[in-house]
Image (cartoon, rainbow, N blue to C red; front, side, top):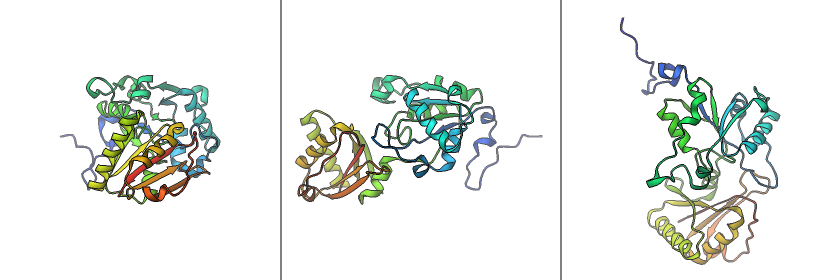
Length: 278
């Protein structure tokens, strides 16, 4: 008798569980983290993370992370909401290399991707694994994309879990176009290069309607805001979202001309997402 093919849904998709190649492999869960990393105050996990996500995290024992110490601290917070299936001492934590933290997953020669396949050995042996960053969604404005790509190469199912993403929260709260947008990471630190980049982003935003989002290391937020107000045209819309999901969160979108009528101070510890548009 001819073997039957994997069951497919009406839309043509195939369940990972239905394919033989996945049956003996673990899954890679993309586990979001709260946005309060390195902030003065913390947000209760149950206020910003679905219980289903926390339960999934509490069941795992194998992790890929940026920093083992902060990953353990996060797991202790998860344990306070839903007990860990495996103790902190039983957790297996693998750190991404330092160069991936500093330069990104795609920073090799000619943009080569870091080969993360060796980090997924536990999944090849049947263990579910978790990928976490220090804040927000892993692989989004944070390291981890190379791990996800490696999982696909190895035919390991990837399961993204629901949780906070500062970029999407800032975009939704900005009033700028959410139909066309781009995240461009960090702007240059050098003054003239930064000015040139700001002008280029503004040109794209005004000509195409595509919202431009970017971030900065918290202690340089004030310097970036000053540069934006000095460089952008008066009618360009500038959105600033600070400390999203935290108790001191605030968000404002206004024209550059309007921004200049008020004194705004950004502290040196709170994460901020900037966006410009029309």
